[in-house]
Image 1 (cartoon, rainbow, N blue to C red):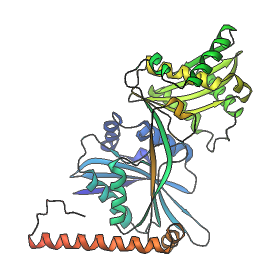
Image 2: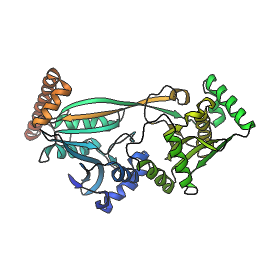
Image 3: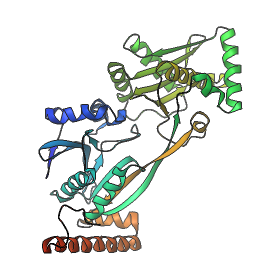
Image 4: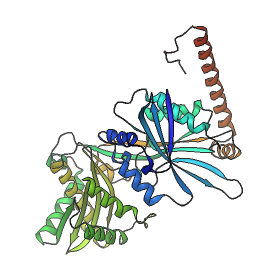
Length: 387
């Protein structure tokens, strides 16, 4: 039997749930770790948003944590929304489960059921971005449907990644598109012979303040829009340095900061988190030269199994990566509340809502039939009914 516990701060989590984070960190993505979630909550949540952490115990043992946040908005009609603790910096989220957790579908069903049953009711529950090819995505979707919510699955972004496959950097380099290889060789040779190029890769706290300053100078001179949460990136760089995850690469041309990239190393995966270059140096391919230097470092020195470009289908990513996968979201509207029903109508349309209600009614009828069979002894209660 599962019990649900709700906390308003990570500092309030009992040690048993903190241990669950530690247990899961050995296999999870960096964006499913406690330090990541805590930094996100500290630096990006707004005044009208409140942290809401769901902890699940199964048979008195902690088995799952689902970090969310709540917000109430709207002037004429207040809307209560429950959302994954995620934003523009998040490439993957989801529940954090211990390595020994089993029966994940039933555990997720219990926590989603508890959410849906809360009073006052949530108008909308939004979970994103999730790995669409993971069973968790389908378990969450089915649990929301079974709870009577109107569910829409939606595409978030493509995710390009490289399967290193035990190759050296030289072997990987030979597989790059010829145009990219020739550009890298030509520009690197020209800058190196003229002694104009210098690349630093920072991984510890040494010279970190200067590295952050140079990164911000480059970012502010790039084509990118200002950061929505200015304290997040400096906080992330310092956090990654403390955790041993950081690879902050900066390319200098004529001793001027020209290009910068933040890579995160965790569980033998190198994640390319942020990149920028000063547009004055774009004709020298400063960004591409830095990417090649970082690739060489993580493949030959860190010996990672995978390099992940995280968020987006930018055309240049396919030149460096080998595979593509997708991240999707699930938004569920509550037809029991006026705001939830109106939101569903706006997003789904009348015909889609009628079809969803029909599917829900069929599922409820099947569940009721299975319960009657259990009571009559036709099927065993330990056998999972076909729903």
